[in-house]
Length: 93
Image (cartoon, rainbow, N blue to C red; front, top):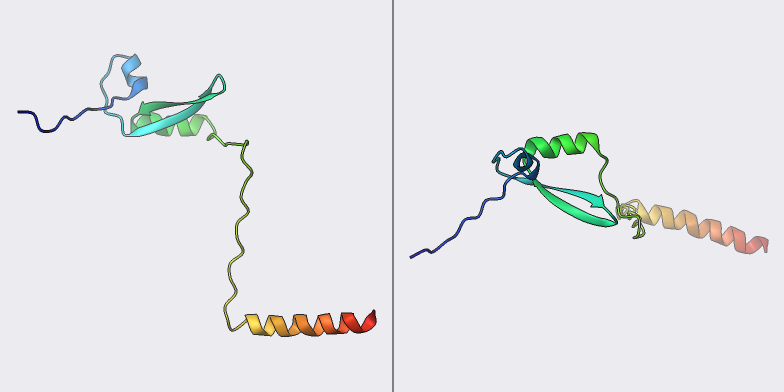
């Protein structure tokens, strides 16, 4: 009775040369307007990274990073100076 089945993925660039090297990475690339994936070993993945720049999806807007939150000790000091500036601005109008 078979309880588990193990399937191995082999590196596609090596498979073209009829070599069986176990794949540990996945390489993504664009081909004819679609994103394709190829199974690759560490060596082939590093070679791909050194030759080509990574894919960037320009169809989606880039999210802005949030500013780090201020510590509670410095926040009241900033609010007090902002209130004073707002009060002086209101008097000039």
